Length: 185
Image (tube, rainbow, N blue to C red):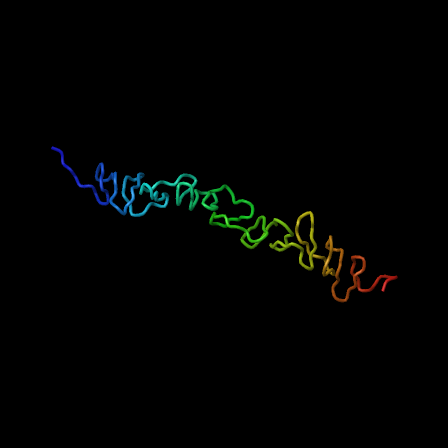
């Protein structure tokens, strides 16, 4: 004589006490555990069409759908739902392994507001400028702003070719001195 046993709630139909086949309304079938759940586990997502929890595919460790990652397996970086081996140009990652866009004209950066190189213009103290600020000159080889050497307050093409001198100094042909050279006034 065989006996019939009730499926354990929230299974609607089952093949044994612990193996659900169909779930009651409001719960979702999770094939990995043959169970019915109120919420899908973090390594899966709810497929609304089938009302089933489906496992995330690698390299996702958590996901919103089969093609949109919320987090990645170790040593991969997340950008817009995709897992990458490194962040692309104009993005950086801190210890969260999430790629975040650099600010402004940064081509590469170490944080949102600290540029390491520029898309256009010149790099000066972690910022990108279309032209170098006073007290610096544009080094065309490195696309960076280099500080003028004292007594230059402003310089051109090199740190020692002065276009403006410190107070008490006079400028003549790119040089600063305390007096005008002989033959000049």
